[in-house]
Length: 538
Ligand SMILES: Nc1ncnc2c1ncn2[C@@H]1O[C@H](COP(=O)(O)OP(=O)(O)O)[C@@H](O)[C@H]1O
Ligand SMILES: [Mg+2]
Image 1 (cartoon, rainbow, N blue to C red):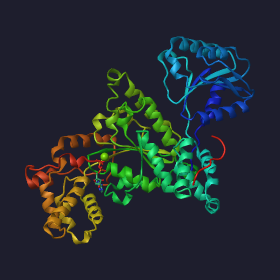
Image 2 (cartoon, rainbow, N blue to C red):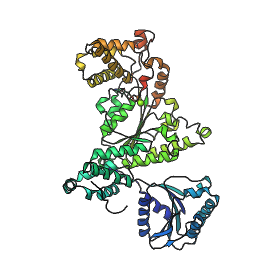
Image 3 (tube, rainbow, N blue to C red):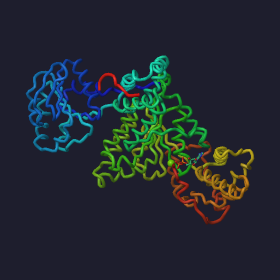
Image 4 (spheres, protein in one colour):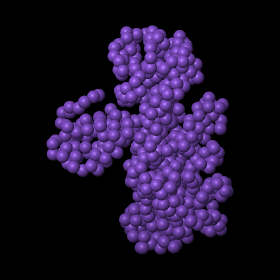
């Protein structure tokens, strides 16, 4: 698969140094990996590389050698100012010292002075915690990328000699084996990947894809923002919405290099809006299976939750992980829940929501990595208008309540799922009786009728389903106004997901048939559902 190359972090730093950026902040939890890249860069560019830590002071690790016993942060900065020639200075974990005004001041002066020299200062930290006084002096923030395929393969090869000789032979004889193993660990840091491989080796005496994926899922979930979603839904589980499905099917190979050569742009993403329970989340989940791509589910609420990291940091982590796993689908369910406060963000949270939102849409529009974003929303009024501008998403689809043909397909799907033969049911009658019901409600009706049938000791029948239909008031009745407003909104701004894109005639609706509602499905209808080889003890 084609992965349109993104500029590497190392290349990015090289550009910044050439452009004489004097103070650069690098965010990464992978100190050793970042320093290794910087060392290579310094060797190539014949620059000295000195690395500082509070415990050891400065140590020269490229184009020279030696140590300098300057553990005090102020003295360390003095050392940088006095340094000769072309050099990079890395300050490890410097952010705690930025609480001291004198250190901040010295760093600002250093940033200014260094501009006239061939030296640059790099602050390397697992978090981006820049005091406001320093913001203007930091010329760039580089969020170091996660390991690429060849780096991950390196981690696997470190563990490989621990496997039984016969297993090693099997792995080496099938080139696609290593490819799949590497793919399975993309999105992890190098140390995480190595641990995952080691665990698989200990447990299964091989590189077992299920074990690797299971571990990855756990690690990604621990970040608290993303979930690596295993596809259980098949694309054929989605009833109706022919236009939407056709759009997705047409793009199933659009991430290949063949598609790029053909002149196709890389699909960016789509937004699904519409009535609750119409299968938006279901479609998003099914796309992973259709396109054979990993699906990452983002909980937008958690970005702002304050439970994990800062919001800005969180969105960067999400983007970084998705890009490392790419080609991948990033599913943002109920987008409006996270970004609804964008407009008022200036007054309510010091602008955080709008800043995070801005960086998200910039990424959405400019990304060159094959990360396809599927966002879903139930409430269009809460969506920031900027999101809907051309160029953000490839397409905005409106998912309306299913029409006759769509309902037929949905009932058919759910009967089959319960091991019933749809041929044994009067689908025409059911379709006629289920105007205004959403896909989620149709599913619930099948389940409820199944309970009744089980209880009375007879099998599920058309009449049983009809009886349940009559007892359940579709959400569309209580939400009529919102749905109409949404339809009106969508008329000019979105494409209809279903070929027929009907406007229901009130007369054939539920009220005309059954009178005023007595029972309600309530909210149920909206359910959305270090170095060298590693010795292991096997
Ligand atoms: N078009 C559909 N085809 C088949 N099943 C559907 C459809 N729409 C909804 N359902 C059923 O209802 C459940 C909930 O729908 P969901 O995708 O969460 O709706 P939404 O995200 O639009 O609110 C699905 O998991 C599926 O079982
Ligand atoms: Mg949903």
